[in-house]
Image (cartoon, rainbow, N blue to C red):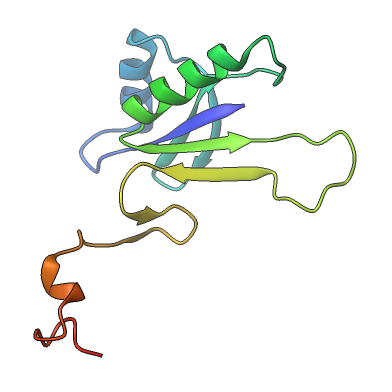
Length: 117
């Protein structure tokens, strides 16, 4: 299952945000985490035949989710890998929600106090 997070702004209610999402064709929510709704983009079983469908779902979820996507995997047998994989399109750690600034040339220069070891 492919989902994307949508933050509910302080001046809106979750019902108003869901009404806007329903107008765009998103009517199912997987989970609600505080002021964040995890909206379902697509539910599919990964096979060789539907790789294109998975790619389209990921691209659409990245676009609507502002660069963030969660993939929920259901294993048939006990598996050591986690069941939710989080992805981000920018310099952002999706697990711990830390944003990193863009790299600048000063970070790699020994003549700069920023890049000095």
